[in-house]
Every structure is written in structure tokens, then in C-alpha cells.
Length: 224
Image (cartoon, rainbow, N blue to C red):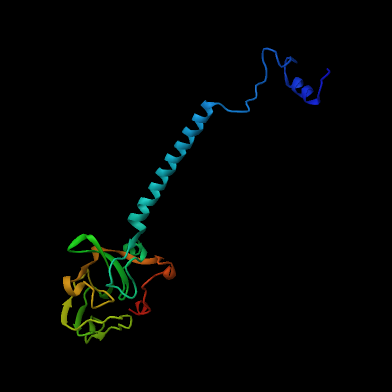
């Protein structure tokens, strides 16, 4: 068998009938796929995108409902720990398996209008009595029948005065904003039922110069 080029010999040897390129069963090599293949590629890509969207939705929705959710702070009631525009990620899982501690910052639904969400710090725990006089907050409980004054060293804006006493139920918390002067909290609308607590902030993503874990966490929290 003679070939003009080595490549021609290879192509002829691959032809089972040793026929020429003009034979009845030529080998076809498509160098430029047609429109049909392009449509098939787009359909395949679209299918993959739909599947990806469904999987992403199946992961994101349960994550936001049961594990964590983003919140944007609006207002000065927690100044200086939090300010308007702070972008927070709130852990919603922890309080499903444990109870909040004193001095913990929590995000919750406002009991009188559950469509609204507030952020405050826990002062009184279930079963305790909270006594407020001027800028002093006293806690009375089974372990401290004579009461003790809580450390409010994190408060930069103390209240302008006033007195009140409130005994909490078995599933109620007393919450206050760090900015005592401008906070609308349990002093105004009463105790916070546990069922309205959504979670605690575990991450601040904005502003960039304040990015960090467990924003607003006070050193006193571990001593509560």
C-alpha cells in the first residue's frame, strides 16, 4: 500500500474496507458543531442551573429559619456596642438547646408587635425580681434573697432616674438597652416572654472596621 503522506496511510489503515475517502462509508470528523449541539448545550446548562438553584434554596432556607439569619441594626438604643447600619449574623440555634444568660445581647420579636425585631441586653432572669432606682439595678433571687447590684460598667449613657420593681415569671426575661436614655425596653413595655427570643449576634460583618465574632459580648456575661 502506497500513500502520499504517512497520515494518508494511517487514515487508509483505519478504513475497514481499505476504501478511499470517497467510498460509501467515509469517516466523518466534525470540526465545527452545528446549531443542534449548541441548543443541546444551552439546555444542559439551564438544567444544571435549575438543579443548583433548587439545592441552594433547600440549604439556605432551613439555614435561615433554624440556624442563623442576617439583621441590620436601626437605632441608638444599644450604643456604643451597636449602631445604626451594623450588619449582624444572629445565631438562632443556641437558644433552642440552652437558655440565655444575664448580660447576653439578644435579638427578639417585640411582644406587642411581633413583626418588629429588637436588640437588647438581658438583665433579669426567670423568677427574679428586678429593682431599679435611679441608675442602680438590683437583682433579687433565690441565691441572693437580699439582692445584689449588677455591674453596669458597659453602660455609657445611664438613665435620667426613675424607680420600678418587677418580678418575672418562670419564662420571662427583663431586657434593657445599653443606652439607657434612649432605649425602649422592659422598663416601658414589661418582661420579655422566652418564646419571642430569636437568638444572639455571633458575627458583625459591617462596618468593616468593626468586623468580629460575638459583637456586644461583655466580660460580665460569663460571670452571670
